[in-house]
Length: 141
Image (cartoon, rainbow, N blue to C red; front, side, top):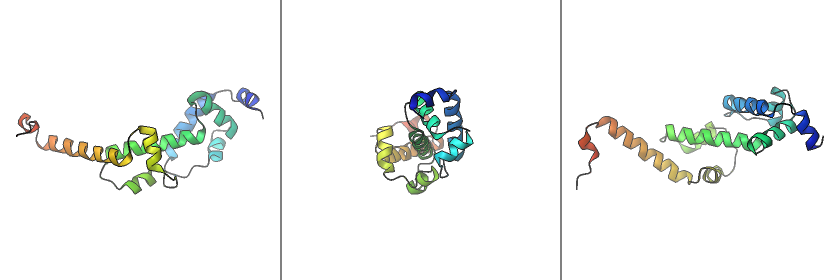
């Protein structure tokens, strides 16, 4: 089917994208076959791709990768002491080559530097909870 005809057949791109994003939210940790996603949404993969292109300016596969990278970002922010490899796998990115490069391209910061920053921030929050007095915030010469 040509892309203009496919676009006409996709009556509700916003609803399809919304449904796909909800599916990603539930299944991002698992291997996702985009054909199975289309079937779960009762549409074709072409229609899904046209919908993502119209609504988000990306393919369905790019949207899934974006979702997984955002989950990795949140996971590292919330639990900066976890192992990087296990965090990557837990977000469904274990089979994606070049995750650190993708992370830097997406968020503009190298993954090791981001992880170090998150660890320092976690240490600072812990120190602040343990030392709530104002004097503890002043660095003594």
